[in-house]
Image 1 (cartoon, rainbow, N blue to C red):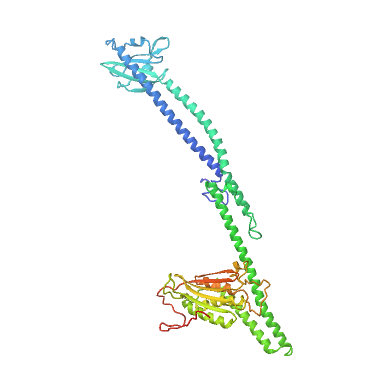
Image 2 (image 1 turned 135 degrees about the vertical axis):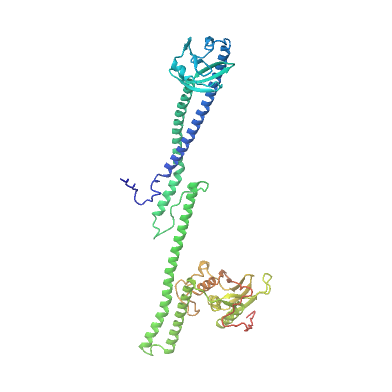
Length: 524
């Protein structure tokens, strides 16, 4: 029968479900395993080295005893089985000696006893000592009834002597060393394990606090309500000098990013709500006016002059049409729709816009300055690549803004400059300036100094989309626009990338053979 497949907890992949232990446990196990391996390697090395030293000393003693026996046996060369040299003092207890013949057979053998005469070996014990080569090297033999011996056999001019010493002392020493090392290693591992557990626990506490912070953030109502003031990882746990600190610092940066994103989304939603409310108000006002005049006309001609009614209806219709067109233009620009690209001469465009502004606002002083030939860009032209109609709308909105929001007699200076890679248009006036609290939002949609959403028919102030349209068109052309204002000096600066040298694009409707000459007045 085939074995049933091992099941695993649901929701875990085959590669990850066995690894359910915590990081603390895995680190403790890894450190413990490393310590066990190190202790085992040190113990084995110590045992092997100590055994080699003890065996070397024992082998030297065996060889010395054999040489001493050869010297004693040489005093009686005719006695091949004589062990008289064992009667001399100085032999250690347990040493055995034997006289083998040329073939290795043991002729006689005895073992030295403590405070007693040497005892002869029996046949089984002698048989264990046979076949030891007389090469002067040491060998290990187990002698029945006596134990394990380290033996050697020497042959000096036909005199052969075999001697051996017991290995019990060496084995006892090694066994004692192993026991001591085992006890010391066990105690050391226990102490080291406890210390490592404490250290690992303390070192991983910052990660626990980081996890607690992440849990607190995950439980925050980010989908609605206030999104600021989220819990942060404490500064002591966000030190980038440690791994845990790097995790804490990364989590803090992520929380900052989340807060900033949520705040930006909330501001975007507020802008959208304000935009819809303003757009609804601006559209409702002309519609209400048109409906009112239509109602008066339906009630009879004695209520209102038809010519006046139609003029007011036409004015409100034009206002509503302009507002809708601006809204549609902003929507198209927000969608990133491409604009018409052609070569546009800003000098000609701005000059015509200034003439139009002077005709509409004759009670202002209008000045035009061209600064195209500069040390940074000698013989530079005012050509850019863009949509001429939209760029004309930008300049017209800037000039209308200066005309509408400044008193009679204000001087408006319009400049066209070259800065090498850009062509700059600036509109400067010496009017009262923009309120400081309004300046940061001057390019936002429906931004007006009039917070009551009223409309001055005398001044003709618009719905608050002119500068927003100018900023959107400028951005779509790859340029930028900014405003600076102090009492007595307000300046709008628009910078557009200059047309590349040798560009073949030409203004819409102009051919290669066409030429245009425009007289640009320097001053009004």
